[in-house]
Length: 421
Image: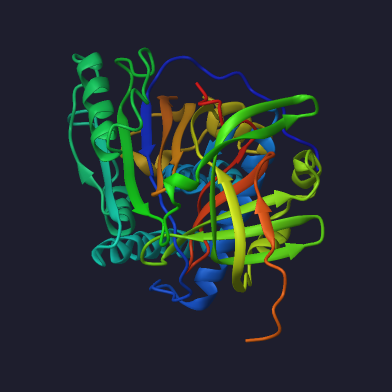
């Protein structure tokens, strides 16, 4: 399939749809709290997984650490897509792997998952802060039907602001909200110059999640060990070790380890190539189906597990990434159709898509956060040997909600001593 030609990205800001999302810790449970029916859940999971792998392939172009939130980006674009029409909407749906006749089910599926997250939070075993809000220009004529859809499926609040007269004050206000909702882990998502007097709307979704491992690692067993970054290059890094019961599988050329968090509603899954420098080969074979196969049906058994402590931040401009995936009209001032957002004849288009994500993995648990901004512009058997899972070389990992299997975060560790940015 021929890729659409890249189009230049205009520099004036008009509507901004900002989605800041997500901070996560994991654990493993198999109950399904989703209110959507089985087919909707299955379709929603496929959309999320396929989009996540597409993004991974586009973003994994360097040898550095990588971390992003497929769920954050998916939600931001879905909110934007709900106000798109005709070919613009079809292209966005294709990139998100949403069938044209399944738009309502797509939004319903995301709405159900938001409720699922809130239900997990109510259990009190983890901390989750979540919010959805829109920040329109005062008196800007947004379409009531679009606002109703956002309220119904995403529970948005509305805060009118003045982009025309107080551009910088508005930028700082939105950033403060993102920082507050991500416990200061995502700072200055909107850089100076992203907003201007032509900006008409910011739509913000922020989620913060923090939880402890179900069985913490003993800090006294964490030791400095060599991490093999590339042939001939190693770095000393704190390697956490615990012999215990984990979800585990040996899949030919790789090992998979599942690390549950308190409450067992979320988990981190680590996919480790057996070959020391086999991550690139693994990535080339990565498909949504293979990732699901690798990380499903992980029987619990005793494992001698070692993983590095690491902390990293990643930032991306996703404009070209999304255009290369096929979302071209949305970035073209002459072709974009976001008529579903407004009551007048303003021509809106996407000027920039910015994403930032943070993760911190230690002995006690995991903390993660992410933010996405879519800037729119006008126009008992016999004893068996205990397997050893030693992540002392580059590996892929993801953070997922176990009831649905939805991927909240995804990334890789090439050098645990590198903090990114």
